[in-house]
Length: 322
Image (cartoon, rainbow, N blue to C red):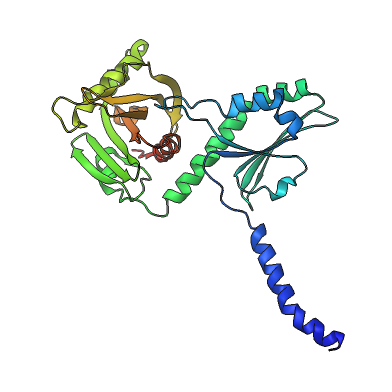
């Protein structure tokens, strides 16, 4: 067999091999709330690694069980960061001739890359401390955006909610109406590990005029609505968990001032419990406080990602303008 014949024989196999390699190089979408950290082992198993874990794997607020803010996968710096595509968020940490903090976004992969360079261990730790809050916000915003994009592929019909509350809300089609009253809607999505729920209701704006007792007002409001969500036995309404005070933040939702409350719910005189996230939007256009709350029941599985999905749904809200 001459060289020309041999070349024609092996060319198809070369093409197949190339296509296979190209497919391997294609990025994957990445798991929710997962960060890839590219860092030398010497830094990872020292003070720098401890600082990273303290900032990015600290417990999530408001859950009934301890779960880290993010799952962290560490890779040695000798790996090319461009090939680390198992995560939408990549943090590169290393010693360098100059201090540097940089955020770059790649739409083609897609992922956010955060570079933290420092001349010494102390410089790197200082940069992590200074920039951790911004990094966390960028990662969480990207996760919420990804969930909203996935949800938009199959949505529940918006007509009932829009007609009743003058809002658009991107709720996945897996949810079903459990209760539908004049100023109250309860939607539920049954999952293998339990269920996730959404509550939408409104109260008069003057209910929140006493700003010094906002948290108390929200707890009272939640507990009054909780009578609609009961256990199988009598006298088992849903109430705000009494063991720990809820976490409270002031924020904005669809450009309007809102109160964000995170905590635990429980069924009175029953064993069921779980986390909730509640947004009370001060909507002067319709002279109301519009409340959208998500809560889950997942006794045997993790709650963190379920709650992030509920937060993403709530943050998709668009209130009609008169």
